[in-house]
Length: 234
Image 1 (cartoon, rainbow, N blue to C red):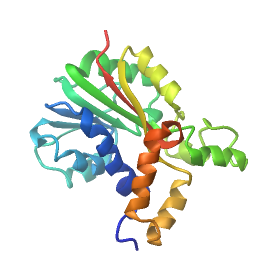
Image 2: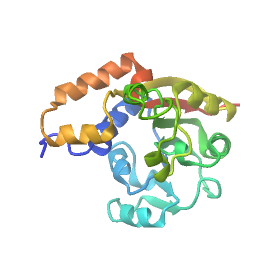
Image 3: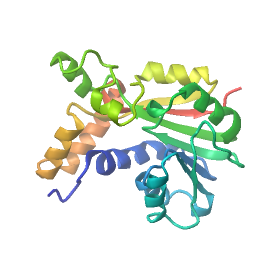
Image 4: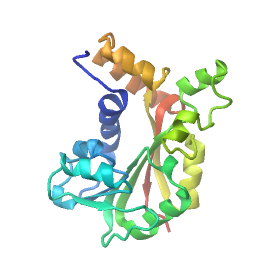
């Protein structure tokens, strides 16, 4: 088993997400929408006070698992984004690999803009990328019909759509959010299951992973995930 990493999403992509977010963090509190089992939340704790951290997730089972991992001061809210009531505004709102799951993404983004984002606040929005090199290869192999298709496996995991940079920014604009930064996270030419096998075989070095991250900064449209930083719009 690899001495470096064990799972592509949690051990490779999550740290690179934090690295991409850090220059844009705002001093203050944080709201994580779609915290699931709390794995990414734990990576946020060095940057924000537990007392100022709120997590929202619709899954009661996942939230109970998160409760065992997180500081007791972290506020956990079990509710849907469409119906949840939050009494505060937030300086940092984190939404990673979640928007592709929701029924009405414009409604949720409007709630972020109008109800939850502080005047100085920033939304960190990350989604899987339709144009990732791995998906484009899958199209050429005739495994999927087009870059933006929702695969059977993705549908089983609750995906409703597959975003590209332009369609994600389009939805942010429809919600009247102000996009201040757009990028990609990690150049990716292999599917996740292929990455997991490579990582377990211990043939991928940290230097190679770093190279994929840096290459992704040059070619965001070929990255595993796409990334927007948004501020409150008018």
